[in-house]
Amino acid sequence: SSIQYPTGTSQIEILKLNSHTEPLLFHLARCFMSKLLGQLTFKLAGWQYHVEPNILEKKQVIVGFEHTSMMDAILSLALFQIYGIKIHTLIKKELFKGPMAPLLKKLGGISVDRKANQDIVSMMVQHFQQHDEFNLVIAPEATRAKNGAARQPIRTGFWYIAKAAGVPIVLMYANSKTKQGGIFGKIYPSDLDQDLAEMQRLYKRHTGLDILIPEPKNS
Image 1 (cartoon, rainbow, N blue to C red):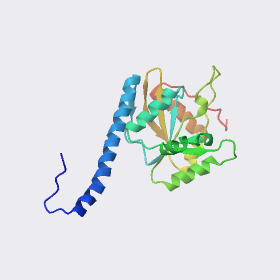
Image 2 (image 1 turned 120 degrees about the vertical axis):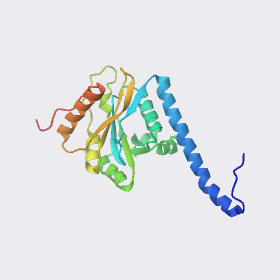
Image 3 (image 1 turned 60 degrees about the vertical axis):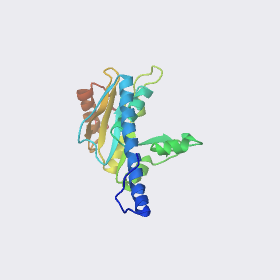
């Protein structure tokens, strides 16, 4: 059925009304569909999710453990869709070529040249400063042992970025044994060794996951 406007509404006024309501309705419909798709992804995978309230702020670095397969990444994206969280991730610049470039940018990808001596920490601080809301998601590479190799301690670049930007580190998890995932805590970076030890304790206590941290530098 057509939209009924008040008697006497001019064509110009109708155009103005449509120009505001149609994008809003489209945005609401897109958010609703995105949320349903995210929920369906968890249901089909047989996983459950939970996000503790009042943890997320306007700006944060979000880290996720464990990172054992592509399913972790898929479920993470589904969780962000459910809660309407716009994220940004660091992606090697080689992938920003051809038809993939616009898609990666739309998905929040930030090009990084791993071969160049690029100051990623300073670059990310600028991104945080230039946005009112900014969520940087990092899955430390060393959490995934390849080809049966022994696990290595997590890489700590995320801590330096959060510390320099003055934002919290939000803790996300995906436990393949229990098929549960979500967001459960955060820390405000102050001392590297102490913060990593606290992260290790929180992950073990709240998720049952053991994360391997580097030896303390001040030991």
